[in-house]
Structure formats: structure tokens, C-alpha cells
Length: 147
Image (cartoon, rainbow, N blue to C red; front, side, top):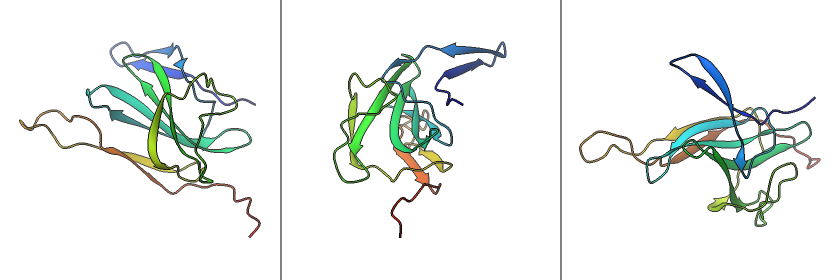
């Protein structure tokens, strides 16, 4: 068995699929994760992937996929156990941690839901602008605490 980590693009005009090349700090394959469309300060679209599960582990890592650049970027935060996450992720290409996010990372989880928080429209009431963030709710994880 294997977890997939490919990015597929469906062209709605031709209804044809293509596999996009994974460049940058690519996440390991996973299932049960969330993926939300978010926009950066320059109003460029990204796919924000959080959590999920591979064959052996519940995950709590976050990655951004830049749609215009076809490039992955790993977000570094404080790890679930309170230590700084150095970006090491066995099974991922971790030549560098691309950017840091603040705050503590949520507990590892899979099969949760997430929604994007949209920014207010611009002064003219048109356009959306940069996303404010992502809310994550629920899901399951394996508690190894024995209690």
C-alpha cells in the first residue's frame, strides 16, 4: 500500500486531467487531510494542506502549494509537544523549511474539516484580497498516552 502525494489539475474547459510536477518542499503522501484555497497578500492563490494520516502516523504538519508557481512550501511552527519544529519530516523533501508560522501547531489529526476565512472585500466592494486564515475542527487521532 502507498499514500499518494501527486497534485492533479482538472481543466474545466476540456475536462482533461494533468499531473502537476511537485517542486519545492513536498509533503509526504497522506489521506484524511484538509486542503483549502487561500490567497496571499498579493492575491495569489495557494492550496493550504493540513494534517491527515499516512500508513503509520497521524500528521499535524502544514504545507502551502503555490498555484501560479507549482511549488510546495512547508510551514514551520511550534510542534505539538512544545518544541520548535525544525521542519524535519521523514518522507518529505526537507532541503529547507520555507517559512515560519507563529503559534502552537494543533494536535496530529485526520478526517477533520477546515474552512478558509475570507478577507473583507476591497474598498470598492469587489475582489476578495488575502485570506485571513483557516479554521480546523474535529477529527481523530491516536492517543498513545495510556490514560
